Length: 305
Image (cartoon, rainbow, N blue to C red; front, side):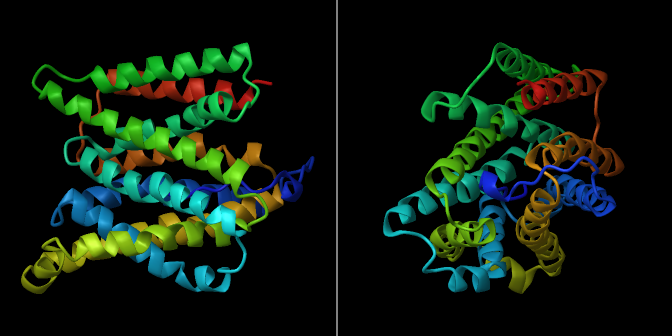
């Protein structure tokens, strides 16, 4: 999935007319983040899920390293622990969870489940950060959970039903994403979004690289020609979905507002499903029903006042 940050309200703008460039950026973000799930699948053709997760975080850290070095003095001393927490639950652990889930779960379905991030952001904010939660938003959460159940537990009789449970790893990742976004919003105020993201990666990048050195990833690169193609997919995943996606997301926030930017939540799963079907994945009618229910819940949560 792509790295998201919530900038301070002071930089949000509200305009009556949405600039044409904002729509172009929105479409680009939906394509970038929606493509990330098929890139994970392609990387798994050679690398194991833990190797892919470690490679993804290592490469993303290197991609944003110049911004991290430039912003080392930006956080207050007490904010570093929250940067580490954000790095762990917003980047490192989800990278492994998504990769492991997609060893058995279709990439398109993983993309749909990722939209639950908006729901869990609201739930965690209400529980731990006293964020307002209305009856309509509760209804949206319940609808989203119902859609998740439909999507995870649907499929043909010929399929191995145990594979459906791998969707729960994606659900866990979205819970962690929701926690990370709340930490960013409530505990890391005053740090520019790009600096914040790069420093969060910097806190976990060395851990990912240290673990990578214990795997057979480098041996595969030395002995398997196909490993370099797989590494290319993982590099695209890390650089575009994390670094470039983050830059354009924050530009979109500046140009419009968070409500408009959140529209990518609805478009991204569609892109993920299209890529999955194009790659030969089987998507059943009940999967589409589950997707529609989940997106309906997410839409209700984001629109409810």
